[in-house]
View (cartoon, rainbow, N blue to C red):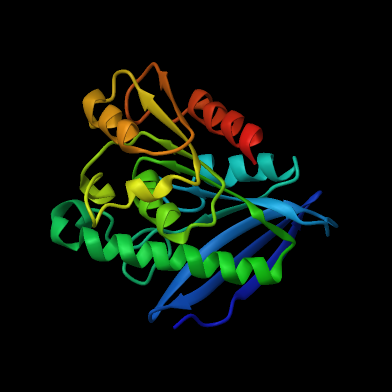
Length: 239
């Protein structure tokens, strides 16, 4: 059961910053949202999901979200399970306990859907123009969440490949085949030391529907302007 949205708001020049939380299945889920001050017409909503060991306050979530919000998007970041301000903070347990992956995938997917319902009722969200950007862990959790929710129009999954938290890419339990209604860009790094190129390409090949793949120089931990730009270009074209 999901409890109502709790919010605290501040003005940052021409932006509204909304700190929010809600309870889902007995756990409090913290988030941040940015949107233009005084904007009342429905706008796209973009969920920007942090990498492992990070949080919604990461530069490439919060700072990027503030920049994109000035262009007329509602930009949101959530603390993933076991990250940020969650009651239990233990990011490394996701790597130590792979037997929990299925449960974490289901948990985060339910939280994303609940967040969309709550923010859609509280803010001027154009529910036909939902976007997602994830980095590493953010993409691993984001692929199941986007696939299961079914309302996202476009997504950029960065620094990700098959397996691990993504789960299977084929078969009745796989989430990837359910991405057919989402325009997907995969962003990979040519020198990624954690995710081999063949795993990223296997994931890409399994995605149905509209898609493309962008390869960038550098390693897995180099989430720089090139990654952010590749994600932004895709969302601007598809939302």
